[in-house]
Image (cartoon, rainbow, N blue to C red; front, side):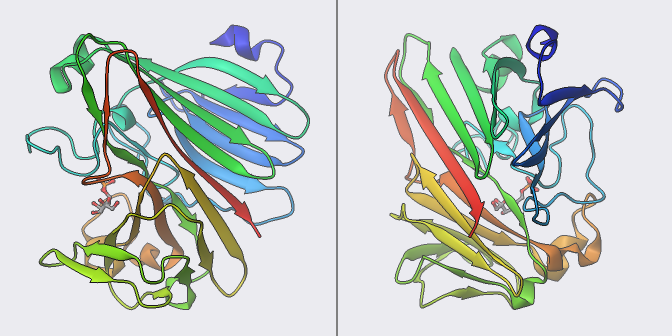
Length: 290
Ligand code: TA6
C-alpha cells in the first residue's frame, strides 16, 4: 500500500488506531477519511461546507464490526442473506480489510481504489471466486463505485447497497423528494407494499425499499439540499431508526436519530444481478451539496 502513498500529495496514512489503517484525504475540494476495513468512507467534508457524511460518535473501529455511519459497503447481499440467516446481515464486504490497489490524484480530486479478492475466509461465507473493487472519488462531488467481477466458472448473484448515512440538522425538519409516486416495501412492522405520496417526512421509524426507480433523490433540511444520484441500481433504501431502534444500537447515542438519514443506492430484493463467468456489475452513488 505504501508505494501508493510514498509520493502522494493528497493522501496520508493514519495508524493511530492499532491494526486499523485509515486513509486521510485532503485536497482543494475537501477532506475525507477512508478505513481499509470495509473500504469504508466515514468522513466527507467539502471545502466551505459542513460535513455531509454522518458517523456515530460511538462508532466502533475494530476488525469484524462495521463503522456505524459513513458509507458501509453492504455486499454481496442486502440485509439478511436470501436463504441462510446464519450468514452476516449485509454481507461480507463491510467486515473485511480491503487493499489499496489504486490512487489517482489532482489538486481538485482524489480517486482511491480498494480491492477485495476471494479467499478461504470469504468462500466459507460465499462460495464463489470474485474480485471486488471500490473506487472512491473525493472532489466537488463524492462518488463511490462498487464493481464486482465474476472470476468463477459458475454464475453468481450480486445484491447489496451503498448504505450511506447523511448528516441532517434535524430529522423532523428533513424531507426527501424524488420518489413521489414510486412503489415501496415498508418493512416497519408487517411488510407492506405502498406508493409514495409526495415527499418523505419523518415522525417515526422509516425503513423502506423503493423499487423500480433510478432517478435522483434530494435530502432537504433547513440548512441545505443534498442531491444523491445512483447507477447500476433500481432500488433505493430510506432508513431512520427513530427512538426505539436507536436505543437498541449500542454504537449510536440514543438521541442520534435526530442527526442523520440513510439514502442508499441498492441492489435489494429482486433488484439483483446474475453475473456469468467473466461478467461484472457496478453499483454507484454520488452526492453533492446543491
Ligand atoms: O438499510 C436499512 C437497514 O437494513 C435497516 O433495516 C437496519 O438494519 C440498517 O440497515 C442497519 O443495519 P446494521 O446491520 O448496519 O445495523
